[in-house]
Amino acid sequence: MSTYHSRAAGRLMVAPSVILLFLWMIVPLGLTIYFSFLHYNLLMPGTETWTGFLNYQYFLTDPAFFTAIVNTLVIVVGVLIITIVGGVLLALLLDQPMFGQGILRILVISPFFVMPTVSALIWKNMFMNPVSGLLAFLQKSMGFQPHDWLAATPLLAIIIIVAWQWLPFATLILLTALQSLDEEQREAAEMDGAGPVSRFIYIVMPHLGRAVTVVILIQTIFLLSVFAEILVTTNGGPGTDSTNLAYLVYAQALLQYDVGGASAGGVVAVILANIVAIFLMRMIGRTLEA
Amino acid sequence: MGSITLRQVNKKFGEVAVIPSIDLEVEEGEFVVFVGPSGCGKSTLLRLIAGLEDVTSGAVLIDGKDATRLPPAKRKLSMVFQSYALYPHMSVRANIAFPLKMAGMPKAEIDAKVADAAETLNLTDYLDRKPRQLSGGQRQRVAIGRAIVRQPSAFLFDEPLSNLDASLRVQMRLEIAELHQQLGATMIYVTHDQVEAMTMADKIVVLNKGRVEQVGSPLELYRAPANLFVAGFIGSPRMNFIRGQAAAAYGAATIGVRPEHIQISTEGGIWQGTVGVTEHLGSDTFLHIHTEDLGTLTVRAGGYVDFGPGDTISLTPDPGRIHRFDSDGRAIR
Image 1 (tube, helix red, strand yellow):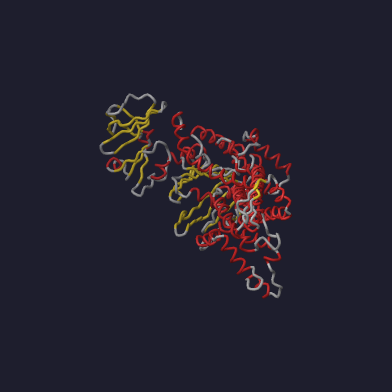
Image 2: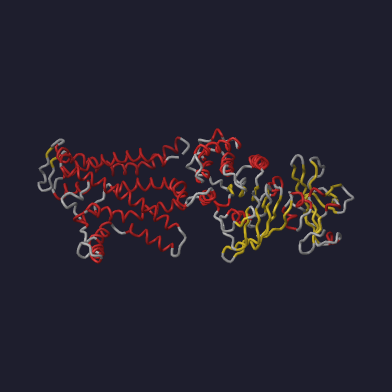
């Protein structure tokens, strides 16, 4: 790519994919923004009228909106904490030489390959069901009142389900990072008199910093839009107790048939996601440099 | 403080005996070099002394006390690793201070000791840098700094210079030797480079396939190698080995003559040959001479020689400097 001609040719070659990707992004975004300024109800097709910012006003003053934002953040933060703490511990465990290590690693990774709807249904019907679930059975066998996870603590139930799905991902990334730690560094720390705990704090954790950053960034992107697990288990309820922003937009569009309001919600969600992204990059993106 | 004794130390990895059985005495304040070709078990031996590997049988005594089962941190040894093993996220200061911090020393005392070590090693200006901002030689010095702050009873070096370029290696070699004089501490140094061994050691331990071939001062090993392996390993260029009739004439199965102990002349010598490749180093010239019945011999001559490739040459070995070996490869004295 040194000469003027080869640079120009290079640009020409990548142009189709760049244009395609740009259209792929801009057309849905443009349409969403356009719809968000319309009164557009699916039950009355053909009656779309321009309403200005009314959709936004309606969506932002909806009492469910604030709950949805809080729920979204609680899910993101909760799952992140569980997956990173659990992931570090599991990675440390899996890094130990032991019998059946290969099979064990595959088993640990496997939840990641189960589709969200399937795993949510299994959790809902086989574990968290207050009558026939395994957790209820355990509680009953010890003489406790069974806990109705999805009715009493719906958000916690969803956090547990989503964390179970993402734990393998965090474990996998952290395990590979752990294995890239220079053996001589560990030995040097050992010679320097650092015990297992000090070695973990001063040598292992700083080494894992970059991997933890990657896990946080990637998971945040996906956790902001958790949807299938909520739809299959609680339907956002009871009330709006487990409704996050993605689910609220869905409810607006396909339960209340208000495409205009849902589009406004979508635009708001995009803006919020970008705010979170900027915030994250400012806060932890620094570890990715150098 | 600082004597190390190995008693019938044996190390097996599974069924493979890497070190069959070694007895060794390292005196206090000595600079001992373990030298040998790669895979001879010299690094393993050092790691056994450090406690990073467990001995299969035998005993390691440090300062007369049995340390065989002690964890590495309790042995009062420090080690400089081949890759330096600096902690990349810590500054130079934090790296050097780390062992003291782990020992729970008060902060003021740590600062004083780190400043001292930095002074000794010319690192004062770099204390706040990260290891990746340092050159190879500076990293090496930080690793040494981290080793000396603890004031250990002995230092262990695992091929510390192999990652440096040639001129830096010569310089660091000198610095380590100076450090040894300054601190007077016991040092055990592992290398595969016989030049490092010759220049730095008080005592060289030549290892081959996990066995000690010979222990002695550099000049002892050079002047009186105990067997063919040591004779071939110590000295550069390598000693010439001659078998057959020419050796039988001296009453040995094999005789060895160092390249520097052969005189060259145009005629009148006892061996004749043709000059092959000549290597001019300025001060010296190495002549590779093809002979009919002795194979190729290397001869070291002065910087100014008139022989070129293809010339016929006559060789005379220095009679007092011919090493004789029996059929088992042991030296005949």
